[in-house]
Image 1 (tube, rainbow, N blue to C red):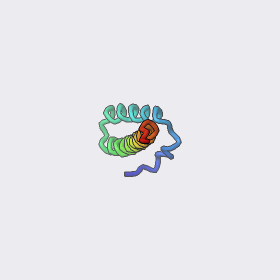
Image 2: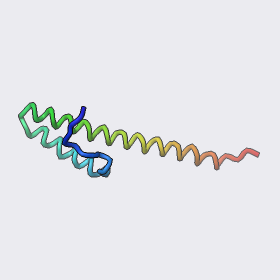
Image 3: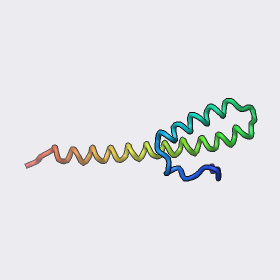
Image 4: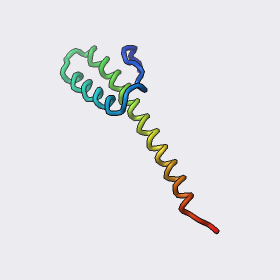
Length: 77
């Protein structure tokens, strides 16, 4: 899903994205307009997906760092 009103998400920090998710979630439940709820849901999905991808990338990097760190601890002579 895509919304043209959402700008480049890579310019935002993780806390900024989390703040936008919280704000949009509140607005979603405050409105009774189904069309507006659908648009908010699309944008929420975009922000959540971006945050999920960032966290997955961070975990991947952390695992790679852990694996590389263990190589220096094991000394086979």
